Image (cartoon, rainbow over all chains, first blue to last red; front, side, top):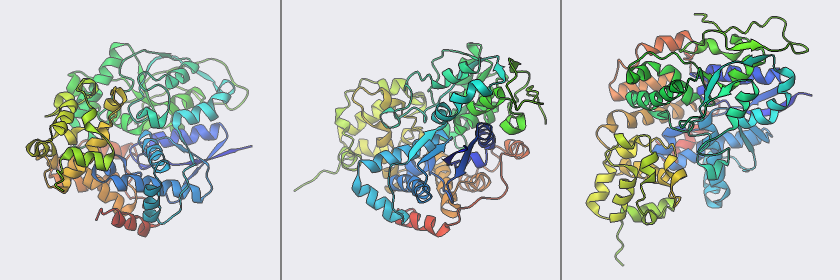
Length: 306
Length: 182
């Protein structure tokens, strides 16, 4: 039977991170999961809201949770690490403060219960994808990779309680299952520069540059991420990174869902890798075994198409 | 009764964070990715709050550091006293705006970006890149920025031309009204 889950894509996944959305959705289809978008969802407010207006930064995510609740969703998948963070922090703050909850309910004009389960993309993969992976895996991810978690997936640890805050492992474990070798490196949870991407691009070039340099120094051939902001900064901001590093770097940045999708035989249209600015060139996979079905003609050479 | 409204007091009252507990170990600044670019490092910020001097309070609200802070939460995750510095930073930013003490440099880039971002949400309920960037360029007067990136993004289907707005716009408008973000 098809499993049904609530889905909050968030604004990035409709724009700059379209390929993240494509890969999450294709992967879910491949694994017989139906992701149902929260009807009429709004922006979570991201960094801007909590920088400028604390109340607003709690009210915007609350409206999303209330919309999910209104549609009887008990579990929602939130692939964007920033949205996941804002929604989780909001739920935490409201749980411990009834007065705040009342204020928020009044502002959104909807009742709110705070028991919705919010899953980040790794939790979603662990729970719904991994158990089926042995059956669906058709290719080995034959590369050395750097798993980069960023800030928002693991911090603040006392609220998110996800993985280890200093040296998280879950993404590494997933990549190892696909056959990749993961590097041990100290930049797993360093900040990429996040929200300063547009307003202080040179700082993002520096912070993200250090991340890319360290990954390259340790011979990684791809960086694996689970956050659209990390991806935007490491991929789209590559000119600023290269300028900081004073060299041309070509290491591609893949979403974890793209990596799994490719290993399960999805093509580049389904995984959206063709949308990357730093191209994913060459063969990342060796074909290991042919799964029972579903693999007629999926050549997994990822090549430049534009 | 004479009540001294120092920044330290206001922080405690509004955020619940007791800045006096900081004993200056410096772990926050050691972990902060932007400490080297800030006019005051995170532990200096905490110390400035502790001295409870009007002049120092003002200097802090005028600093660039509070706007450079990325809210990456590295500082609190390593703080042995578990002092919520990101929460303090959020409060300092809002105080700085309220008192019109925004840092001059941040007022040309970081602050207008946040404002453009919130404006987008106010009008459409979601963030919409083209509108956001256009609005930011007007505010910051950086018309030529990223002029080469935009066509690439368009080509890769990363910039939707039209915004996808929330249907219940009235609800969003009300939210902004009720949270005093007019």
